[in-house]
Image (cartoon, rainbow, N blue to C red; front, side):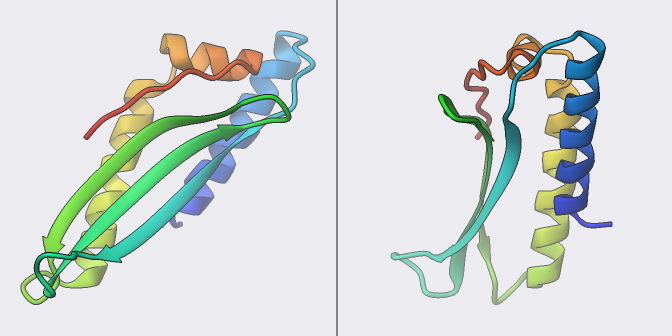
Length: 114
């Protein structure tokens, strides 16, 4: 199972919560993953995960996770594994928060971590 599968399961969970509460709202979570070469040091890369809530009226950043890593020292798969686990931890903390409830309602509010 990869992080995209986790986000897909979370979207299914959100849909079921909306049905339980009879909330007729469209919108879902999307994960944007970027790896950008660091402009100062060539061996470093910036790893960024942004979790978005998107519907017709709202496009909000929910969780932002960043890490700068020396790819010459650390293996890329190890960094991706680290980022996936950190995002899952943040998702556990986000569930049942005020921001989570707003996403259920289709409102979405920003929740950041650096």
